[in-house]
Length: 344
Length: 260
Image (tube, rainbow over the protein chains, first blue to last red):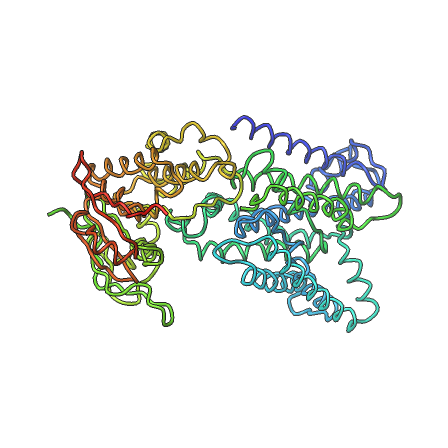
């Protein structure tokens, strides 16, 4: 098991690294690997001869490509880990921020911030509003969909439909009330894109996301015990109530901050933890580390496809992940229905 | 007189107007097995929940080692008592061994953590679960799940064990095994409280029985004292005859049946 874990982690890290290198090298600006290394060093304050002769090229690489790449790594990791944590507290492998409407809740908050320019908090306003929306959505789902410490699949999905519909209405209302410019901004942002990620955005995502990832990892062992049911977990010394509250906040923070800057990117939190579980089993320490690596790798590659598949244009990445995630979700439902009771 | 683990005094529990437990007083001693018996819905599981600290009684008091159960922290309780619930579902495909390992969680970071490997292996051996320990829990049969869950409780290695129907869905061989394990634990000074439905089984292994009916303690004493034909007939509403086990002298409860 241990060697298997090492192999999978190394493989995931290799896929991630490959994605990072490919993303650095490919794009509208043709750059040689040598120039790339030069540009990276230059940006870090080390003068060298490899850097592109034209300083605007170095500048563009840093401002556009590198920040976007960093953002994709962060968002992929956050969404996957958020999915894994949500599945742990719902005791259900189909719980995912996008599916149950947490992302939509965040979207309503963020859209409202864009439309009404809640400028009081500066660059943070969208993130804060998205967090508030996400928190509200996950609380609704959590309070209505669970009974006796578990979530029936049907209840969970139906609650998701209700929350998504409600959030859709909220989003429509915000669109209706906003002016043409912000309307356009909201629509494109909502499709999900890593285009235009700025370093200040990346910084906010790091500031919020990194502590969440660390806390998630620290709680992993307790999530294992939660799989035995809430009462049994508490018999084994877990303060279940506190664990649930902390976890709900974590999911809302991670989803909110990701959605705030890149829009709705659904199914990542569903697909990645599921694949990791299939490879490494359900233990949450490996699951969270694996999801972190796998989510980052998936998002880096997906974004590379999004910005290079059609020349001179940028596909919405949320559309791409749903295109793959939708059928995957369908397959999961079919498979789990086939083996009755497989939900537990 | 043996040391007292639990002391329940006039415990009552009501939800709205429904009285689930009323005026239950009993002691649970170390080194003894207490069998909780009674018909369905008598309040046995609720009483076990009160002892475990899951259910706060609405009347009376419960103490563990002379300290109110509500004053114990969750972690302290996990070091002191283990609980086997009636339903033992596991979310996600953890293997049996991983489930048993979770029983060691309270000891993480304590000197006892060095015992983990031994405790897990011993618990699996005692419940005869080693053979299927590496299979995913959701693929196991009901009886196999029950044995893995019991192994998890044994691995927790606490001085007090609260077992809610540990023999449910087990064949008679494994039922006897489970109570022999309980017997050995009691002989090593542990306090064991077990909810049991099979009165003869309870009578054969328990040091004392407590019979609940409509949330009240109707009898508490040695199996022979508690299991009289009149009382069993009144509480369970079916005619029975009580025999003495030819080998042990313990009471055996036999329902009176007529061939149709």
